Length: 206
Image 1 (cartoon, one colour):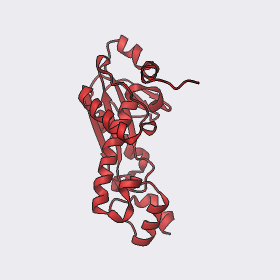
Image 2 (cartoon, helix red, strand yellow):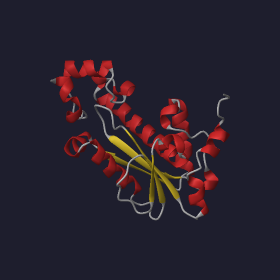
Image 3 (cartoon, helix red, strand yellow):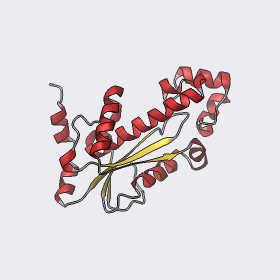
Image 4 (cartoon, helix red, strand yellow):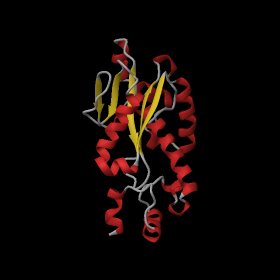
């Protein structure tokens, strides 16, 4: 099969948005990054890009090369009428679990997008200031969710690179807090730092 062009992907990825735009609604995408890592925060984003300002090339952040994500992030932040992130720290993740921390961060990111219709990647049961639709694998199917995934991913990656300067032994700039062999070996050698999720590393340090 021929490779999908950016223009073809754009048309495919606004199928959820089009009927909502037809109703005159602002459409917001919500996604998260960082549910699985051993260290660092979970970061969510809520993004609204007006229909006449869509940025070509947007896709699920996991499918976009880092240099292209950085460029798309800047373009999306310029084009968006609303872009906000929500964060929950490792301490909060340990206290209330990763799903509840993610939900809180999503609600925080969306709090000021009043009367938008929210398209959310898989998560349900959120308290939002408007109607909501949950879409499984939404970051690959919805433009707005994909845009939110890029904003959340770049925001979190930049923060993890900052943490690498503070805790260089763990390789956060490379692994972004995920449980790579290098990261796990460093954990066993040096023990955890304040950015580690204690509930995630109990088995590793036992």
